[in-house]
Length: 335
Image 1 (cartoon, rainbow, N blue to C red):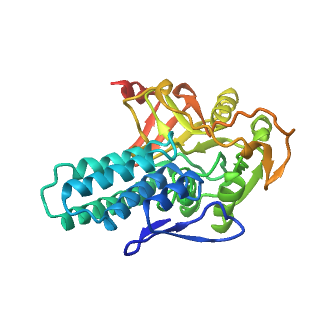
Image 2: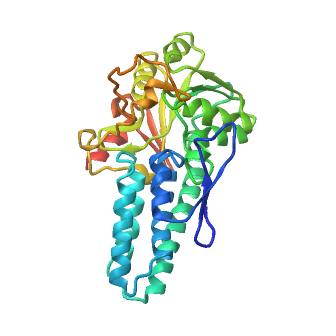
């Protein structure tokens, strides 16, 4: 959820869920950058909309006296936002889309500011529409009786509305299909436990929470029969998503289970291969601490990548707003 209200961006502080619903009121680029960097705002599609509204804030409050000065303010704001999180492509896509739109604009400064806000709102509206189309397309792959495993949070909270992976689940449920969900806790920040379980429970969709290291067990015991996850970036040869996704995909492959990825086209980055993508490394405290309590040996060395890389050979299909891409379609990604 994110919206523009006369110079303020309104969204939910996801770090406070599920125990508190705290509304963020973001009024400038620095506040937007802080919210993104510290995961108050997270989820690849939502990051795209948030980044776009960050530029809208820069335009709205700019004191520039010319289009050239205003463009310089926007370029500076984009640089600040781009420095927050390097992996999810939607953030960069949204910023570049707006900057491309405004470069060379010949109208008045007021018209240019209006253009930035209109384009940001369009990006948000398009994401909401795309998510519902993803849900409709993906629901075709879901049958009554399915038990679906999902990893991390690719729901309404990670998007402008409805969700990608959870959008598919939500659409299938609304069609009357009797399904259940197995949600991984998603260490180290527990997005599955805090956010996915919260969304599904709120919506009345049956959900069972497991630890990340139970995935092999539930597949071996045939407790689940399908996997659906989101994505932070889809490149020519891989899906980049929350750390642990690759493990889930390999286990699904070993057990003969379909592994689906649900993501809007704004997440596709088909000019690159996996080796070209920067994987974000996060604060070691996320691993060594639990609820601010040190649980590891003091001073231990930590590796804490936020994302991993799943080769496309492990992906059964990618569900997008314009249809479903199967293995036979993946070769086109390199064209």
